[in-house]
Image (tube, rainbow, N blue to C red):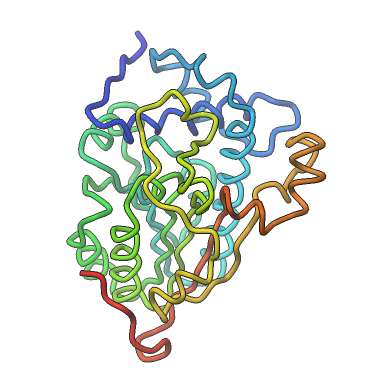
Length: 284
C-alpha cells in the first residue's frame, strides 16, 4: 500500500519536488543523475505529482543541482581522512544512497521532526547515515556534531533550503557554521536578488504556498557577512548540460552568468581555520 503524505509545514511539502524530478530523470536513457532510490520512493508515496509536470526549468535544475552537490561532496570526501557530511534540510534526499558507500565518511540527515519521522518510515536509517530532527535555525545540533566528531572535517550541503529563510536567519546559520567548523566547506543554492525582490518563484512553486524569503546574486556577499567564508565557486545552472535547457536558456541566457545569478545560482565556500579569516560580523 502506498504511503499518504500530509504536511503541517508548507516548506516541508516542497521536499517532494526534487524527489519527483530525480525519479523522472533517473528513468531517462540520457540521465544527468541516476537515482533508483528516488524512483522507488516516488512509486511508494500516494501523491499527485502531476502539478510538477509543467515545470521544465525546475525539472532540469533539480537534477543539475543534485549532481553538482554530489560532485562537491565526492571531492571533499576524497581529500580528507575523516569526513562528516551533513545534509541540511534533507527532506527525502538520497545522496547517501548515491555516493555514501565510502569508508571515511559518516553522513547526517537533518530536518524538521515531521520530515525525519516520514524519512524513518520510508528510508530505514543506515548505520552510516544518521538522522537528526532539528531546525536549521538552532545551534545545539552543531555543538553535538562537533563534540561527537572532534577530529573530522565537515561538509554541509543545504540543497533547496535557504531561500525559504529570511536573510538574518541565513546569516546566523553561516556565522554559527563558520565559528565551529574551520577547515570545512558549505555548499548551497540560492534564488537571486532579482527573483526575490520581484516576488517571482521557480516554475515548480508558482502554485505552492511556500514563499521565497531571501535572495543572493553576488556570492562574494557571504564573504562580507563572515570573513572566514571564502568563495570556491558561484555556478550558473545553465552552463551545465546546455542541450537539456533548450536553445534560449542553454545557448543564450546560459552564456550570461551575471544575469542568471539574478535568478538563481549554486554556491560553495571553504571555511578558514580559527585565526585565519579575521573576525566575523555577528548576527545574533
